[in-house]
Amino acid sequence: FLTIDDFDIEDRTILVRVDLNSPMDPEGGILDDMRIHSHIPTLRDLEDAKVVLLAHQSRPGKNDFSTMEAHSRIMSGYLGRKVTYIDDIFGTYARSSISEMKKGDVILLENVRFYSEESLKRPVDEQQRTHMVRQLSPLFDIFLNDAFAVSHRSQLSIVGFTGLLPSGAGRLMEREITALNKSLQGNECPCIFVLGGAKVDDSIKVAENVLSSGGADRVLVTGVVANVMLAASGVDIGEPNMKFIESQGYLDQIDRAKEVLEKFEGKIGLPRDAALNDNGTRIDVKIEEVASKNLPINDIGLETIVAYSSEIENAKTVVLNGPAGVAELDGFEIGTFEIIKAAANSGYSIAGGGHITAEVRNIGYEEQFSHISTGGGACIDFLAGDELPGIEALKVAAKRYQETE
Ligand code: 3PG
Image (cartoon, rainbow, N blue to C red; front, side, top):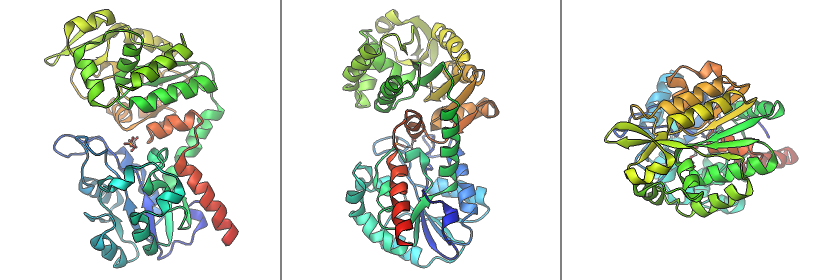
């Protein structure tokens, strides 16, 4: 694909899809700004252009689904220039603001997921015909995708503009692909994927992919992913935990998990104990005792931590995705921290995903990791050998551009 170096950017109006999706507190404060900071090299290389940033924060229905205002403030601080927040995506206000831009200006448009069509995953040609693309694309000379972290989604703002505008990758996209490719080339065995967090559907798919392709020898599960796998393996995880899975819309994943567990018998490690949250107090119990306590699981248990850590430390390659528990709660961060420490002691370590990489930085371990990816799902999909729609769309765009130039 093309990069910034392939275009004359002087005075051009450039649409840049970035991924600023960050962990946020209930008051709307940004808890970790790594993703915001990671796009600064791209913006520095576009100083002579007019730059319009398009980004999302969370998903509809989630607590941290918010405007992009806080992000624009943090970005202005890092860039040392104003990043103007416009509370509109492609309406008259957004379009007139873009038309009035001068060289060196940077605008951040509103959370693109406020517009419902954004969340539909469709092929490039369909995304290209949408209202947003038709309204915005005439205003731009170039489209850059710097949002590696969401390039595993065939969403409108990722693939919709690449068919119409000369398109290329931003600096962060380049850096991620180079680092992850390097890790794939040096991929030594045993390789372990530790899949946690709450994006259960993505994680089950990746577990299946990496175990089928031989990309991983073992998968260890933590977080909500582990609870779904435990339920699939016949363990009664109790009402609060089943209710949580239901509230996240993941009940149907239990059957999927069952198939994957059967297909890869012995290759998926499940927790043998769990830390329950009893009004803020951590109680470690054996997995068979979870149901009778009727309390939510908020971390993997101590026995599991010891067993997982020793497996992880002895691995040559470790990929961490998603926290092991509710790491922001006092006492329930132990699993996540210990797994991070064990991974740092392994041969080659990669961490991906907003929450776990924030914890890596919290405990000052970033230097000890071989690569910290801004991507969560995108990182594990890439490492699992999947083609990412956002990257594929850039390849097609490059071919078209080279044929017409
Ligand atoms: C992420 O946080 O992994 C990316 O921003 C993509 O977010 P999504 O999983 O809500 O599409």
